[in-house]
Length: 262
Ligand code: NAD
Image (cartoon, rainbow, N blue to C red; front, side, top):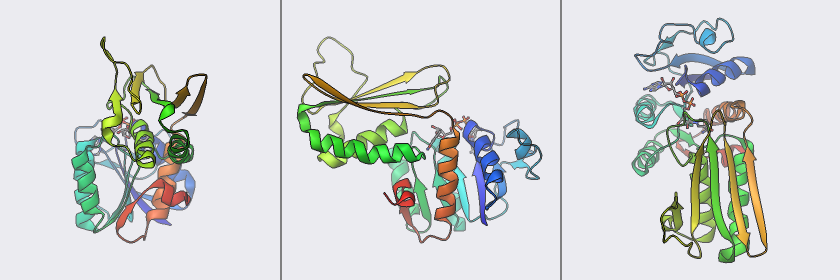
């Protein structure tokens, strides 16, 4: 039995983590945490998640010490929970996106003391896609134009999505390019694409859960790699699987690819 705490418990992801964590049978939810001013504070986390009483009330602080904390909140909150986990020796799964370079530096520092798994997308398919997109880009070379288009629901705060950035980073790493190759939201009257550019585009549409297409196009043909998330449970299952895998692991920074052995 792996003991866990969930931050962002009242959020879209937090609710599914609670519901599926309870269902899993080999996870024990010790704490469900949200903002101090959240309406969910002091309510039963199971009732917030729509699964009936769980016997865990939503709090704004972490009283018990779980083996793993799962964080799907926002970058400022994530920074706070990284510090808490580091101070108390708790392994950490970070699903929050929109992290800056300095947030990644803080994660690297924390990973000297605790096990941290951070992933912009916890789904199996997307993590496979990261690998495949890098390989395809390397095989096709600069003759093929690469553009990454992502679509998410109208409430999403950050853009482009962490997943789109994950695909881009996999392509940059496999082709030896720098982030200067990324062209965001192309507009204007002198924006002809240069060889090697990677265009990044974000759609914000209705209740779209998450859709990513990477185009590899030359004159005469186009290869498209598309991943569609049909509901949030794919991310929650991935994060819960990651938490079980991470419990008891030595300090270090891990990815979903490590969990899946990719
Ligand atoms: P949401 O806005 O529905 O939920 C976020 C929750 O975090 C809210 O309930 C909010 O009150 C809470 N929160 C804010 N500050 C907090 C704090 N200091 N302590 C505890 N809780 C706090 O958002 P969401 O759709 O659930 O997404 C959350 C994050 O996860 C976003 O960054 C999103 O992009 C990311 N996400 C990642 C994946 C993945 O697979 N990695 C998948 C989906 C969403």
